Image (cartoon, rainbow, N blue to C red; front, side, top):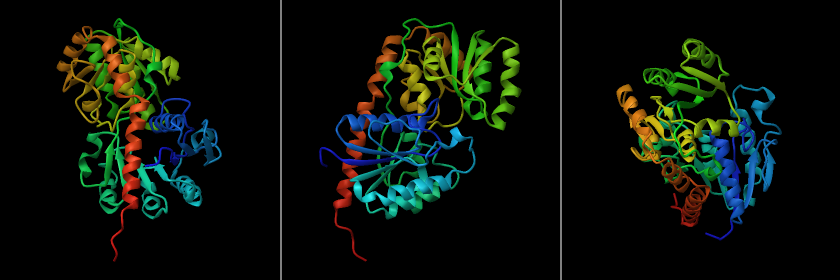
Length: 354
């Protein structure tokens, strides 16, 4: 692989890169773009026009969709983005797609090699069948858990996310409350988090968005009664500095949903502040949390209560050090450079005839 590559990064059209508030894919694209640019690669970012990037930005669309109030189907907008990439494909050595399965046809027929990072669940909505059909498309998983249902897909690598976690605030001493950061949906385990906090007589501070109708309904049914009885302090959706302080001041962050997280940025963010994570033993959290070191993996409320008791004894400085070491932008970029090299090597191999 050449020391310096011409790389196109393709982001979804809904949010700017980086996003103004909590969002996973866009934050990872921003972090990777900045690190690749810092290493001397020529990086072009296809993303909404209100994105901020020191390299070349190709606006697609001119404004992030959600900032305009649009919350409908985004597939047509993604196809417009892919058309813009296609028109310039010969400028690049490799194209790195972050638009999930909607980019598969593009990846198959692109004149420039394409690698696709999958950010969501891969066991629903016909995705297993898509992965079977597009077995020639080069893929990156974000956890071993995510890729386990399609073991025969064309996986180039499994690459855990990285973020500039050294910038997170740190508190050496455990706080007197529990934290939850995320969405107010049943699959995120809000009910279980509230019940656990109530059972140990601790305040649960919730930093979460409530936008969609189903989120509002779940909030009214589950969260509002807990606010009234004093178990929950609801903070709404916070900006990053305020959200990070919520992590840092907690005894532990709770992630008790049965939903198998493909990765779970909340976990590594919390650990970077020194605050351990108490999580259901499911999904990628079994890979990112070191049980008894950076947090605890639990199966039920009884184990959850024991985890809260033992969280006070964890070395919060060590929790932070391990998170920063394991989930750095440099490590993530190293692994993506290796994945790019593998895809480019394959592209140079003679193709079978007939």
